[in-house]
Length: 143
Image (cartoon, rainbow, N blue to C red; front, side, top):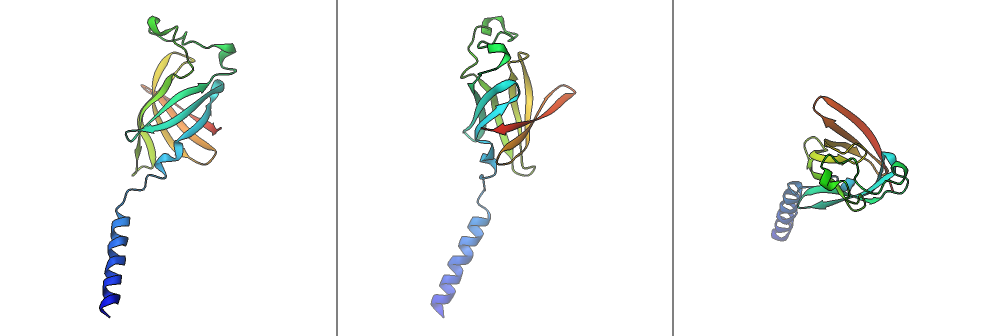
C-alpha cells in the first residue's frame, strides 16, 4: 500500500510539473523557409526567444535586383539583399497565440514595417505588416 501511495505521489508531481512547463512547440511553427511575395525566399530562425528572418534566395525578384537600391539610407543602397536580415525581434505571445512586436524590412519599397504573424500552419502562415494606420495581410507559403 505504501508503494502505491509513493508511486501515485510521483505521478501527481510529474503531472503538476508538466502542466506548468511552457510549450514552445507551437511558437516554433514559424521556423523554416518561406516564400514571400515578389519571389523572395527567407529563413526564419530563433535566437534568444525571438524570431528573425534572413533572405536566402532572390531568384526572380524585381527583374534581377540583387542590391538594396530602394533603401532610404543612401549608404546602404549597395548592400546585397542575399543574406540580409529583414525580420527582427518577433516574439511569441502565448495568450494570443500569435507572433507580435516584430519588424520587417520590405526591400521592394525600402521601408521598415511593424510585423505580426496571425497563424502558422504546416504549409502557410499569415503575416500582417503595418505602418501608422495602414496594414496588409499576406499569406506566405512554406518552401
